Image (cartoon, rainbow, N blue to C red; front, side, top):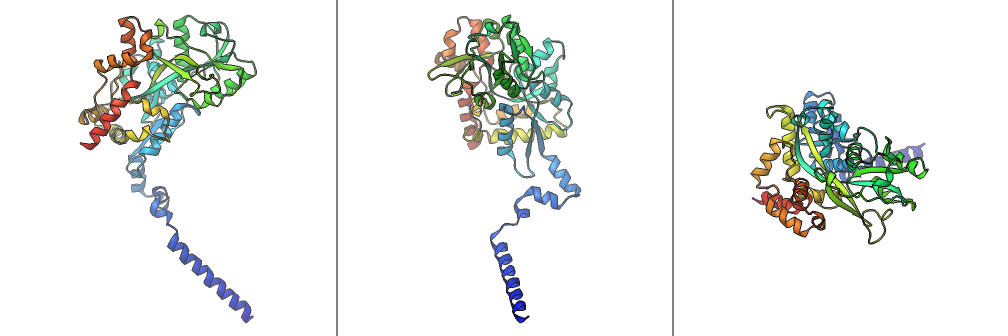
Length: 389
């Protein structure tokens, strides 16, 4: 009996000792986690208010696309406890994001494609819709990927063929509709989510799959089948008013492009957009809070491990026919970050291989309207310089 009592006493002493050491070596999660603090204070009105006051929601895009990765990057860099939280939401594509920004309660920002609002107006779905939007910044250019059997050498060969253009509420759908219509090519369109469409193409049920995403696209990059390749998209006259010449290479997609090969295509800008809130509203205050944090920390996005497309972003790049969010415009002016100038564009033309294809002033003007990527280095330098002032 005494022996059992002694063993029990030793066990209790050991447990107490371990507990004491644990307190010495382990951090209390409630002291380092704002989320745990919020849970412990569940029911507190002040906690609820503080969590909602500085949370900004962002509609991104579908799984596998660039929008989702950009949303995750923004949350990773900008989240700052109760001072600011960026809450990215998986979306359904550019068209749906336009509707979400306009109508969903609590949605502050969204990533949309530059040609989406024009498409909605030209097709009669909306009138003066751009007046309801502002933009924080033009983000990057999204390339048009056309995946098809190697026997298909050009878009013209898709006439009458079954072509998947993603779901009708996405940006790929809009861009594909515009491009094929302007080029006078009439495929048989089907509306299938891209990952499923690629599998159906392998099975011979679909002749080609369109994906308009920033390179390198995760969904396209994971597609591996030696029977298929990327089809070139000619930078035709009919496309030059709204799109930018671009190219894809083996480094982007070693599974679809051979070594030393290049596939010409087109690209369309992605835009970080918001509803046109009045400056004296609470929703506008949250947008201004986001802009200050985003623009101030912008250089961090252009280094690993963040998406390589961040290197194309130029905060000050203008977006024709769009109104910039006043808070964004004011930040850029305060920090002396200038927009693209004609002289720098002329310099870009001299250095760009795409410029050799532009024969007329009208061609050059069309490219100038879309020109953004080359200016990114200048804008990054200006932002860093503004931080030191």
